[in-house]
Image (cartoon, rainbow, N blue to C red; front, side):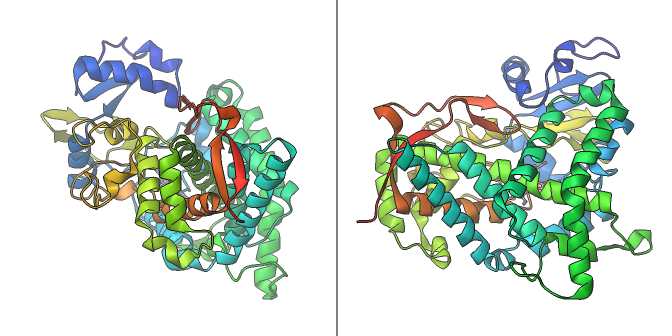
Length: 461
Ligand code: HEM
């Protein structure tokens, strides 16, 4: 195994038992400085290999992609959270994962499907801009954007997931339930201490919110009468139609559908709204970037033109490089024992990859902490960078290899869409004439410790 700190038998390295999720990062950084860019820690008796080097990550995720594409099996008391691994992110590497992933990618996330939801996007954008205008008008031009961005992303995904434009209160309920679920993930010990009660509370809340939506859509599909405000199809429709070939073509049950809808909302909303806030924070902090961007996008923004805006793309990529919403990927399990870079990684090990460390690698990116979109323009060191990392990993905000985020192009498109409209519509300045503080703090994604506060004024004459 790769080197690591000494561990107590059966207990592992005690420190990891008290730390979850992103809190892992500072001590892991210390281990990399001490032992090198690939280290082993132990959680109980499970070895976890933490990889902080892009070239080693490439060997594992691309050259031995199939071996590193599995996911760990959750302990029995937590299996209900994913309906026995019935979600794209939790399913083991096999036919069910392929089926679910293909369904999500082709039915919802591919570019031509994304284009069909232009009216949903316009409507969400309209609400977002109105909320910002209204807040600014009632508070000396100052807005705190975090909640507004989050609400916009959740509204959009709820639209795409359930095919209905829900009332604001209903969207807020879903948003609150998602947040509580994600918070619970950070305190998994609740499920260990009182598994039955937590399971009951958790399932009841989820059923109350999602079951009526699922039932009404099922009825609607059966009666073939599209309701007012409904889209022709949505993610839920694809799940209602899906059949599992290796289980005699059975349909998904309600619990599985709830898990998949919840995954769709959770995976897509927090990540994208966090990235949007980081990008806008840098746009506010760097007036020269903002003016260049405003000049490129203009005030009449058309979706079909977004692909033709190189500086917009550069700003989005630089935002994702400099402030990846996730500093690690989801844990990977391996399908068989394997030797890589002189180490043998056993079948029961987990492996994780340090996205943020790779994005800020000083050998690949000069002045890696500097926000400089020009790197991605012709002649810059990031010109033509392939963020899928298939030939070489230089940055991996969406992961790399078989488990790469299926929402990557969806997210890039929506980031461009919102950033261009926010900059095209308003002139942004740091609130109170102050500085924008770029300190990070880990929650489920790595967010701004001090949420962005900005003064906005209309660019329209
Ligand atoms: C800026 C926005 C986003 C970022 C930075 C991001 C990042 C990531 C990362 C780092 C992974 C883990 C890859 C791995 O485990 O190796 C992932 C997985 C995933 N993401 Fe995203 N993501 C974003 C948006 C989205 C959106 C919009 C969706 C869908 C609506 C989505 C759905 C998923 C799913 C389902 C997985 C699990 C894939 C699998 O295990 O096969 N993500 N994402």
